[in-house]
Length: 312
Ligand code: FVH
Image (cartoon, rainbow, N blue to C red; front, side, top):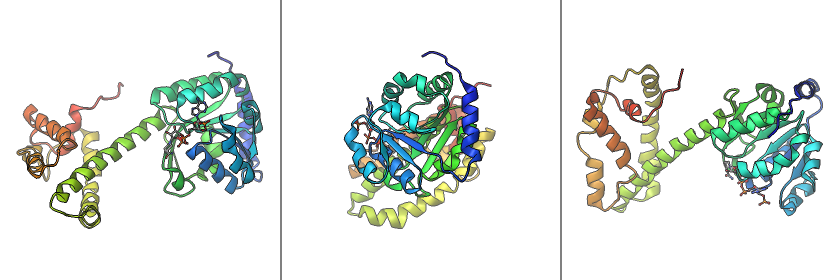
């Protein structure tokens, strides 16, 4: 990937986009899978002149019917708008589409909403800058049906200028969060949020399986007991987060030694015929922390067994 810096044209274009607030900027959406199609429909609905392109052109037909311009060639799609939104399967697909177009990217703002790794985002950001484009990486924390509602949280990182200039356009998709200038931050936070979600879902299916052995209906248990309980437990998270930030884990209510004294959850699960395999990993970490002499700590100190501190 060759360097081809052309910052001046970027800056001019970005100033134009912000200055002329009475004219809505036009948008190109590249990738019309379930998510890309919904993004394009949202831009159209919000009044933006929208151009669309997809590897399989048939997927553009419905959007063209709704008023989008369907580009046959990717080069035409890129030329059509100052703002390019790309949302395809993965970064390999994004590179496959954009690499042959590198000479056409100068002066564009590229917002990549494809899911990827922090390293892929950083590499893509450098490549874009080297070709004169402003780059924002994005992580969509929502399914297509939530797009255009406040529940669609979308994380952005990369060019702050691009974010500030196109925030209004991006806000039409949901609730935007800008996380910083390093493009890696959006995918890192995206994956961290998903990890939190899967941890919670793992606990959910274990809990429901456990009470299900005695005929308790999943829905009753979930709405009446589990959700209120988890909400109460979630309210303790800021305190745990403070402990993690400060490194002071002194137990206030419930020590690790007390919590890890007996594997009652694992034992009862086995007696009831339920596999404890979603619960066991966290319990093993709690026990290890106690064995290492930190039984007087709160739960949050378990992070010391898995964390890597940022290099200063
Ligand atoms: N859908 C969702 O709920 C999630 C929510 C969170 C974020 N993701 C990410 O969004 C990216 C796109 O997801 P999608 O749901 O739109 O995915 P598909 O419906 O499978 O569409 C895939 C599009 O990618 C195109 N594509 C795939 N490979 C290539 C390639 N080699 N060259 C060019 N385009 C390619 C595909 O084109 P086609 O098959 O229609 O020709 C679709 O446009 C994704 O990163 C999610 O993780 C969505």
